[in-house]
Length: 550
Image 1 (spheres, helix red, strand yellow):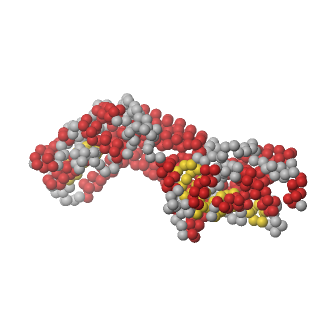
Image 2 (image 1 turned 180 degrees about the horizontal axis):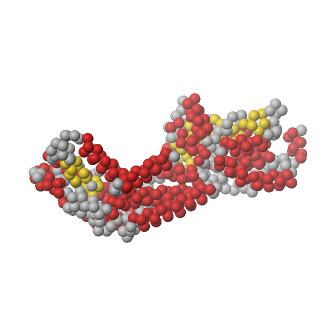
Image 3 (image 1 turned 30 degrees about the vertical axis):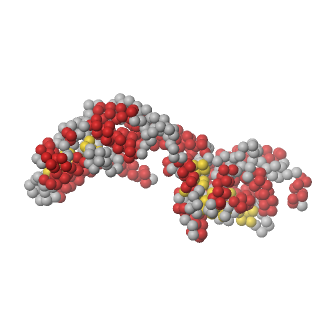
C-alpha cells in the first residue's frame, strides 16, 4: 500500500509538472526554487548557476569521477544488458550534458567574480551547458555507445557476451506502447503461474517472469521519465558563461576549466564516461561463468559457527507431506476396503474447498481440519503415530534437509521445529531438535481428543513471535538466526531472522527470495522409496487389531 501511495504521488507530480510545461517534477521544483528565491531575496544580491544534465568529470578530480548514478547511467546500462532495445529520441537532436567539474569550476568563477546585479534587480543567472556552443548530437551519442559496447560487451551470468541491439530512433509513443503491452503479457503470465501448485525449480519460472516484468517496468519508467529530454529541441544559450570565461585570467582558466568547447565528445564517451559507468556498476566484463558461487557463499553464511538458532518448518521443507496425508493415513488404518473407497472419493471431492481454505488462512484451515480427530482415542493415535513416523514422515523426508538439521546441531546451533502439524505426529523427530513447537489438541476425561486446539496453531506471524520469544528467553539473537520455510505464509518468520532460507518455495516465495537475494534450497525425497498413489495406511488384519486393543 505504501508503494501504491508513493506511485500515485509520483504520477500526480509528473502530471502537475507537465501541465505547466515541465518534463518532470525535478525540473519543475528547480524552477519553483528559483522563483521562491527571487521573491524572497529582497535587496540581497544573488547569482544562480543553472547547469544542464550533469555527468562524469572531464578531468577533475579525475576523469570519470562522479558521486552516484545520474540520468544517463541507468539507460546506458539497460541498453548494455539487452534490457532496453529502443529509446526514443531525435537523431539530429541535442543531448545537453555537461561534466561535473566544469559545473564546479563555473560556480567557483561566479563566486570569485561576485554578484553581477544591482540591489532589487532580478537574479544574475548563468547557464552552464554545452548544447549552444559544442552540441552532442543524439546520433553521435548512440553510435559511440553502440560501437563501444560492441567492442567491450557486458557478459551475462552464463559468461556469454550480450549483443547490443541497433537503435532505430523510434517515437516515444511507440516505445511506450511496446513496453506497456509487454508488461501486460508478463503480468498475466505471472498471475497464471501463481495460481498453479508449483514448487521448487518449477516455481523459478514465475520468479524469472517477475524479474523480467520488473525490468520492463523499469525500462518503461526510463522512457516516461527521460524520453522528453532526448526529444527536447530547446537550446540553452551560454553567452554569459563565455563572457565570464573570456574575462578569466589564463592562469585561472588552466586551473578552473569551465569552457564547454574543450570537450571532445568521442573521447569523453569512449575513454571516460562509459569506462566509469562500467566500473561503478560492477557489471561482468570478462567471459566465463561467474567465479563467485553465490549459493555457496550464502550457504556458508547460514552454516557459520556464529549463528545462534536454526528454525525449521516441516511440510515441504523437511518432508514432502502435509496434515491431510497424515490424517488420511491414520483415518484409513482401520477401515475395510469399501470404507476406504468411500473415504477417498469424499476426500477428493472436498480437496478444492480445503485448498481454497488453506490459501485464505492457514490457521483457520488447521482448526477446521483438526475437528476430524474428534472422538479419536488418544491411545490408538499414539500407537499408530509411531508407524506414521516410519512409513510416512521418514519415507517422505528430504535427506538433504535432515542433513542440514544435523549440520546445525554439529555447529552448536539450537535447532527448533515450528510446525502446524499435531504434536503426536512429530514427536518421533525429537532427537533432531532442541525444541519442537507443534499444534496440540485438548483431551477429554474419557481419553479421546476433543477436536479443538489448546491454543492458536503456530502459523503465519505466530511463528515469528514464537521464535522471537524463544530467542529472548534463551539469550539468543534473531539477527544471528536462520529460518527455513517454503511458503509466503511463513514470510513473517523468514523476515524476522538475519538469514532466511526458502526451501522448495512456492511461486510467490520464489519470486520474493530471488528479488531479496535469499538462499534458495531445492531438496527432494530419496529415490527408490515407496511412492503410493494415495496416502492410505496399511490395513490392519483383525488378529492384529485384537492383539493391540484387547
